[in-house]
Amino acid sequence: MKLIEAIIKPFKLDEVREALTGIGVQGLTVTEARGFGRQKGQKEIYRGAEYEISFLPKIRLEVVVPDDLAGQVVDTIRNSAATGQIGDGKIFVFDVQKAVRIRTGEEDNEAL
Image 1 (tube, rainbow, N blue to C red):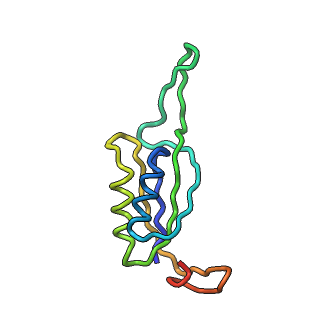
Image 2: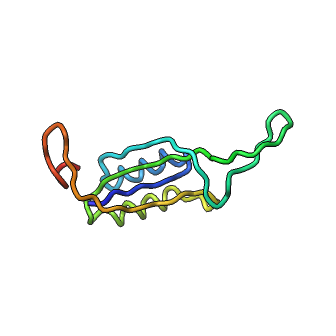
């Protein structure tokens, strides 16, 4: 099993969710996040005053999938979250040693 964590732009969330549902992903976790990468934030003008926003709003997605689906999930997120602009985000893939569904006690792939 693999844990796929993706940091994406907030306005791409619905598009990514629909694309993942379309390939058979049954669940995911979404967290609002703030951060910056190479763009180092951005400058905004508010009431005539310019100020710098260091941490930009992001969305963090987490999904656990069987090993054989991981590559397709990564490709799907990459394709549906891309805008071609700086700050599109990152995708990380981790190994998951065990998963347990609390309600039924099912384990590993059956728990997904």
